[in-house]
Length: 131
Image (cartoon, rainbow, N blue to C red; front, side):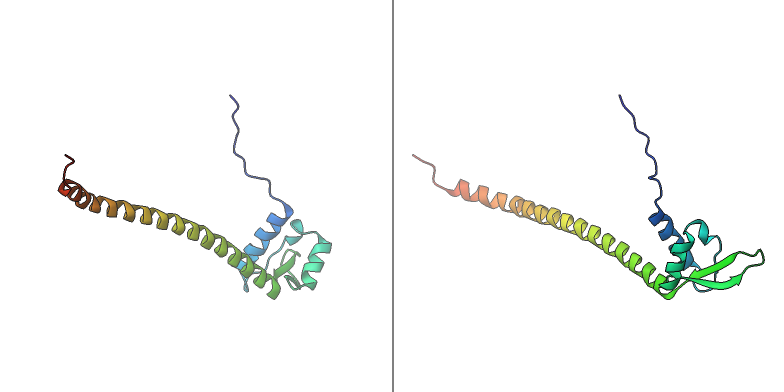
């Protein structure tokens, strides 16, 4: 018998980036973040700054670390991710409602048949018997 251990899938750079942007959104606009370079390489960080996804504040904290915050396009990006998640949840709920509708239709038909059964039995009994 072979057993498998369920493990979390390793986080890709995209997953780390998404987590960082969502964390920055939680504190937007008041919080400033440092150590962003640990997640995003410097050349990519410059590109994200140019695209207004992450904004470099050009100030340093008391420990001399660069500070970053979320740019306007970054806020739109998080909003798009939230809309995508909501659409996926809506699709799942729609599928569940379709299933429940089929169950209700089946139950309704079964109840109609059960309600008609005595009427059908009476009609069969009222028929003349074959001689």
